[in-house]
Length: 191
Length: 314
Image (cartoon, rainbow over all chains, first blue to last red; front, side, top):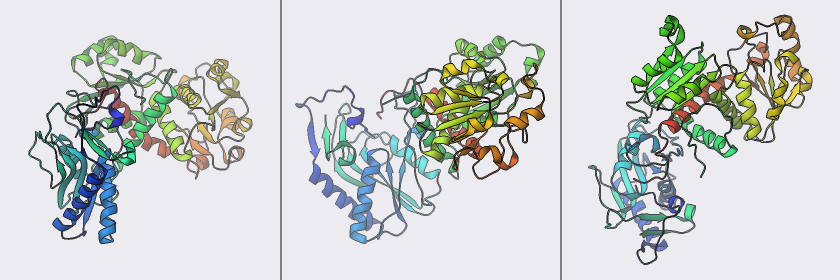
């Protein structure tokens, strides 16, 4: 996934002419509300359902979905977080940030329907790594994928089950997901 | 954000507080892997880690081996007693042969201080010091810091008493460096002959009386009396040493009520530590061993992915 939140921008210039907001605060809220409903609809309720966020912003999005589902169904789904740093397939190929933020899955994944949550769906390699990591914890009944933005350019036969917004992008463009929890603002920007 | 960018892990000397904290934070996130059903991540798949041990070791060698295996590396152990070292091969020649086997990292323990540094100059892979002579044992000190931080929530402001054979102890040296950098007060306690006055230059306080040294301590680390290095009669007898410096429940009454008892192992029960203390409620000696695996996974991971650690982007 594209992890180009403010934290990693360092000296990147974000010229105002070439950036555009594709989702604002309201649009993100509505997209997450719809995804929460779709998750419940597709799984016929909240039984044996759990959400797992992929570090970093996927964890925040998973927490928001847990809160929305709790509002609507009165059930607080078990949730966890996954750090795919140790499962990446690009060590030595791409320059990666060697920061391990920890995986935390405290429920038993055996026979659960698990929805992985991430901010941006791009090549699919993060999701491949996340599935490997998840399966190390046991054998879930199914794994589904929810993403806020699908930007295209996938390189693996993986496709999200729930999408906030499809955003066609050029490969060289960066998709910046900013969330209140970490960045002080809710928006998705392409630049 | 603070990173760890050194090519080797040879000692804690010169590491900054931020670097030490980064290493501890990284180790923390590796702990969870050892609690899983499947205690393995694919990070170092297809890579070989060589453990080159010129001194006997149970804990450290096993810990490095498990750490490498939990990262999916192939761990190969070479112990001096069962290698060509007994046939007279020099460290230089052994190292050249190991390079030819293309390891991803070499972990070395050697009775001579500086041996890992010598190896590091020859090879193009990371070298990790697993204890060199009386110099440093950096992964031990890191796992000690990890254990203290886990139990006390912090290191700064604590008073830590290190008791025993300071003169021969690489564990003490690495611990003094780490503790003072992280803001703890360090006391070194032992007979005058095993308490080199140069230790003051590290910022440690020296005590020759056990009870005075333990008074008000938050953490007490016992060191093994290194009988194999006592050729020069540093004290009259082991019995007398034990009478004056053994950590007994009575001596520990001087320390804080919630004192932590640590020992790097192997223990000489009844010499530097009483069994009632070693197996007592304040002992975190086995936690140290558990944390050792996480710390060594973190070091192996950081060194073998170094250089790629700039920014994250898929």
